[in-house]
Image (cartoon, rainbow, N blue to C red; front, side, top):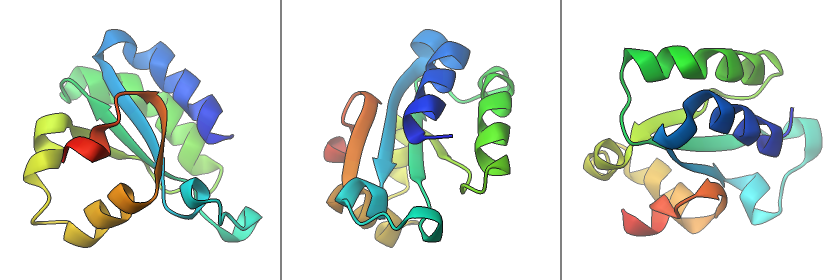
Length: 109
């Protein structure tokens, strides 16, 4: 499954609650090395409760089953509050990312 296919599945599952899907890391930087590299994905929703997690489950389960790391799931607010907890990860996302859907959230944190 490609990141673009995952994005389509997330759009179908979450509808208007999905704010952004962002590919980050080596694949976004153009350094993806096939099966030796992961596709790292950030998913931002306007809310992230039980309903949203249930809606995301089938797409994310299929994504992980194909050997990809689980997408990072955040609301925009929780992502902004996480910059001191995950400074290296946030820096990596900001440095090399490509928006697959929605807003360019990494530029706002």
